[in-house]
Length: 343
Figure 1 (cartoon, rainbow, N blue to C red):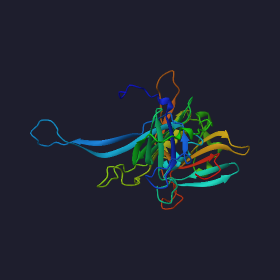
Figure 2: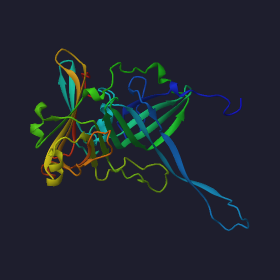
Figure 3: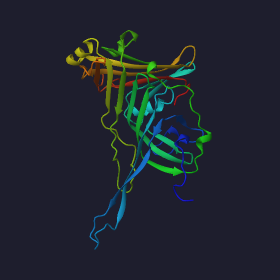
Figure 4: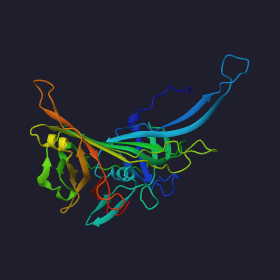
């Protein structure tokens, strides 16, 4: 049978993952896995190469070597009350506190540093591409995580992941073990934006109307963490400065946000998503807190007669409190899920 004479429909593709105990050691098994339902993913293996420019009595190149292997890619999915948990923890540096509730639990995720005491330092992925071929990806660390929502759409999440290595496998038969959540993802209808002077005052009375937002966490991983003797990453990749960016689109109907921009007013932001019921006492919920922000834009643009005056507002996201204390942070996330045990 010649290569390329059949077609494998991507509708049969699937993804499963698991937090690693040891960086780079594959952790997904038929009994230890989590699933998500991505809209797309492009995990890829790339290998740098070089045609050697040598003098060998010929005008063409004669010799070839392979160099660094890079394994990376992005996974796009809808923001989900259960399936997004592990991605949020890893993207924020791996630090989480578990609080058990009746038939539910709270996971309080603060800004960690991928240190040994943190919880989810790396992830393994099993990825089936089409209906035949599966790949194993190990040592996955999220370099960038983007969350966005807009009117008329489900909320979305994109994770850009850097892996240590990958392998192709025909022996993985996880398809019989996969189980996907029946809970719907969050939509713009579930979301609320709150702004006030301090984190403590972010209550329902300070909610403001917005039309969309984008939040991105960039860990600035050192992607070329290598050594002599191996073409793959030599260990868990260190993270540089974490940069959190946040912007919203809001109708310009008063001078309030403009004054915050001009006066560089200190404020705090909460994004809350409320989802499906867990029990009579609890609903699924996600709270994203930016405790120290400044408006760095806020003027409205007149686009045309048949448009509404809008302002695209960017925020500088800063660490709150004393940066040398364990309570300082520039972002925190709490997720209430139906899990009754820790991750």
